[in-house]
Length: 416
Image (cartoon, rainbow, N blue to C red; front, top):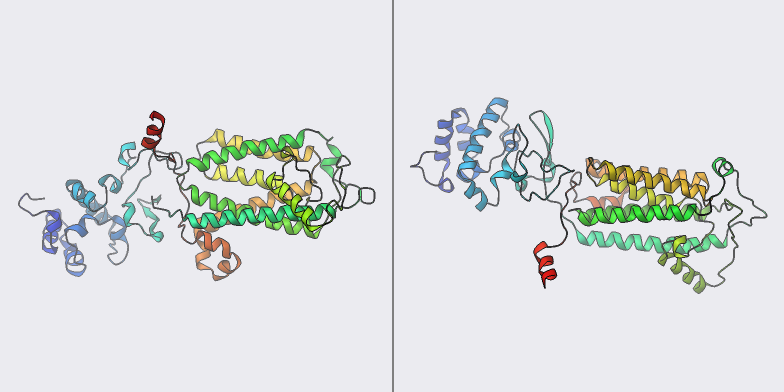
């Protein structure tokens, strides 16, 4: 750029045309300057996506790449102007090589375990539909801002709390309807008939769930998009447990083991039933908290919780965290084994719980990540709650981590 030229902020289309000619792009002067009236600020914020997509739609790959090289030189020379416009020069860099950790804003962030990702355009210039694009023959992923939408997260939390409360009440109802053991003995079950009962196994299954829950809470605390993750967990967990309410209410199975001391008609009036439901709800339905129920066999709620937490931990942690993923799966599978070894559920209860939980998790995230439901009116009708919670989440949620509290504030508090 010639020294005699004015600041790039004052460039007109004539200055841009002159610059294009100097850089060897005379063929594009008419397109960029005459037809689309690009001035200094416009040419400075031009991206490769702009060159490839309408209304410019440059067709020659070599010209696109050479023009972007010249534009990046111009951006480097005017990095102060970029910052005034709300961009950083480092955020515009893409390249054949990897970035250094300092070439991204906020080097503390992690993207799926990596310190940086390639990016061909600034964050601010991306719309929802531009999040993915082809660059250099590769499918690139770009950073974009995700609205936490806390009010939706609060609604999903209210939803799951209501479902858990309703589930507790249904558990009281099915406990009163549990078939008499003398009349209806335990059903034949290959696993339960082959494996002797381990008395302490169910407590170990709940201990696996507690450890898995603590791992998930730590991941949730450190994840940048914790509001979206919590909203997804609440909506999925609430939906599976609502389905569980229906299945265990419509069909009462006989108890799976002779060791279970179950008797119906424990609560005669509604007030007693409500008190019992509150006790189950406040104790999270766990025997470790003194809750003992019968009749809620189709399907296993403990298996649902173990599996759902496992899938959320493995989905929202970097792929390279092999130890966490292995530990999560071990806790999930051992928890399921302990449930069966305790003879607290039939094998079919556990299998159906695992299948429903995994399918629902995968379907939910496939729809959310591909945005396929936006093109289908039927999908929006069949999944109204999903459409409501995910309508503003464009594409996969990146695994970005940060400290949730302000470091200077915390240090001030510690120092006094």
